[in-house]
Image (tube, rainbow, N blue to C red; front, top):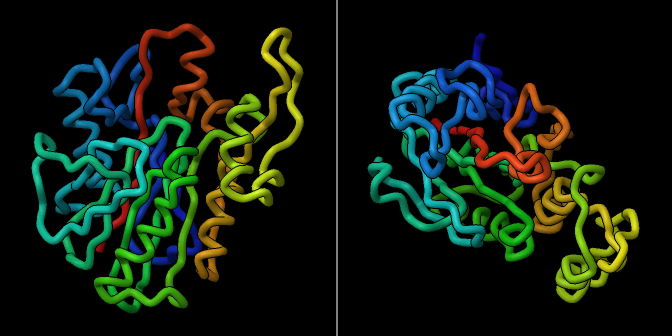
Amino acid sequence: MTIDLIRAKALGDIPHGFLGRRGGVSTNAYASLNVGIGSDDDTAAIVENRRRATEAVLPGAKLVGLYQVHSADVVTVIEPFDDAIRPHADALVTDRPGLALGILTADCAPVLIADREAGVVAAAHAGWKGALGGVTDSTILAMEAIGAHRDRIVAAVGPCIARASYEVDDGFIRRFCEADPENERFFADGRAVENRGDHYQFDLEAYVVSRLAVAGIGRIEALGLDTYTDDDRFFSYRRATHRGEPSYGRQISIIGL
């Protein structure tokens, strides 16, 4: 099975790809392109999967990743660093050729961003907490610090959990509405759960797109792919949890120069 490499028209010929779970060597629950260092998968399989993913997007590049913590913190990468010393952060930016910036997800939104003219690219991990905390805003500022211009930046939001699959509770929606009352528009009424109050459906993708637009990004592409419902194509933390599965894999999104 070949690697499932999903590209965004907005990013044009910039080397990039949102990868699914196909085309790797892992087995069972991790089948097959699991790249999650933190999973219980076989280490050799993870290493091979990460190699394959990198070669599919930017042959010969050095893959650079993070220890993701659902923050708004960004790392500007000027040289490769080893997986053993991954910084705790949730976005990477660079202007150096030969570096493949990689973000892992399993329902959270991967965001790939670029200013082609300036030669600056970025990859951000936007779960609800990081998105609300402003990870995309921090990423854009970090790009500008090394030469990008906001009016030239383009962005793509990759496969993530869709609103129809993302049920949340009262406390969740309160966090967003306390930050900005207009955030209520990203929630639809969900099913009422006995003894748990009303639930809602959260549109993570639309929220991330909105944050990018408010930040002044003029061209944003949302791929509209639901990780939760497409078992054959994507890993999903929430799906694995609902099924009572002991673990789950992670997919990767990569961009480079």
